Length: 120
Length: 115
Image (cartoon, rainbow over all chains, first blue to last red; front, side, top):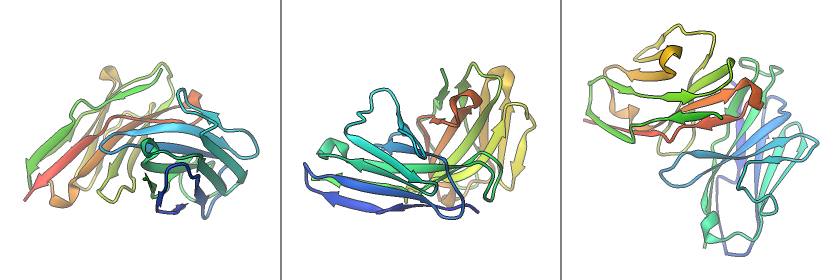
């Protein structure tokens, strides 16, 4: 089946630094990817929709200057957490939308394994 | 606006018991998709099922079954003869056709199966 990878799987950084998380669709092209954040024992909250070749669309309450999203190719979207603080510590999950050019049913979303960010 | 409610925060049953996880959704769209995902302690989401709004037929897959009722806006999930490996957090989710495939998740139900 279609596979989405995330890198790194976990990262620990100091407060004030920036962290980049990559999301790749390995065997299909994804014009749209989604970024979610999950705090411990909570649900997944959609942060933004990443569209290839255009600006991301952010959900209400998500700071676009803090969470920079770049979708430069049909297989890669990146999320950069700028000037990270301890409250940004969370599990970040991406998903990629397959419009049917890959395996699986049309318009199916595939989720990555997640990236656990810890900010000290 | 779309919304998914999973009223059961935590459920604990003894192995081999049957267990039903409830899911109630809200949407104004006539075309939408409903999902169930499993999230084991590793964190990776495991896709279980996708159902579109025009298909109310119930589905069974091994020990898993799903009951979709549009009249009550519910999409409940039953595990028959539960096993310890079923222990995980289960999320019900909704995607409206008009919202460009955005998936909105319920708050999740933490299921613990005791040996």
